[in-house]
Image (cartoon, rainbow over all chains, first blue to last red; front, side, top):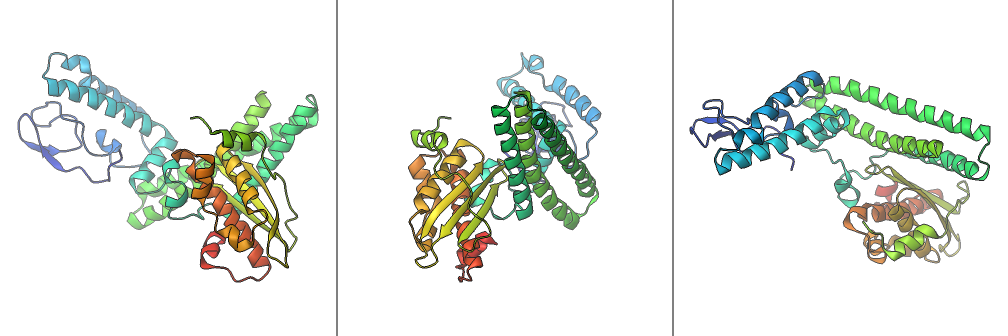
Length: 230
Length: 139
């Protein structure tokens, strides 16, 4: 489940009763393990939500925390602490897997910010049904048509070198388009990380539509690779 | 996830695949997409100018089996209906007919959007006043 940002509320440590921030795995006062924190994945690593992350540092922190919450270390602890170490470990794994991947990280942050992404938000519940710009749809449809033509031609005349080369050309084109989207996304990361609330809201909209475009393009790349690999 | 028999039937034998002349005034074209899964769907209608009955409907969909079945079924249903009758088709009707599971409901929404977009395009071409609903979809 996604939690809203800034949900880190002070809670009392179950062991020493000293209040601490709800995003921490261990009580800063008595160092006892805590129930799975209620904050977001970023706060698990002591980070503010941001899109440019030092991945080496993230990995280092992941390993450090993983060792600390490892269930082996709580084999002889009480029932609660044993269960929390399992739950904290699972949370830590989910958080790391999500944050280390640039696209998952971007989608996660956008979801935290209330963007409607993913199949559960498709169709009627979508606030903005015309989110896909008409010219992108035309382009994607056209590219799909071309790809299908090549696929059919290939089925009929297996060894036609023209089809092979136009398929490879199509693949290069899709790859370039995809790389352009990724470059643009990285630019948006900078803008989001550095921006104030108003700038961020704008950047978030841009990123949502870039991710939409990316999904169309990666489908095309997948399809053309399928044909080429066949 | 298992597809229903009706989805498989439409997927294997899609009805009315093809294209109509986009530039004809009798033809309305709707091109819609679902960014969540990257599906694109084009649905076209040819409307008799005298009777306002949809005499021909064609579609071309790039997407999953449910998206293809939804658009195939949609063309079957709107053929022979008047434009206004066609607008009465709801995505829930498609869901019911094809027994679509919840994760595939958006495919039926896409088909309904496509019908509305095609009719909206035809209305625009022919100067027919749009209902607010159709205008919203055809933006």
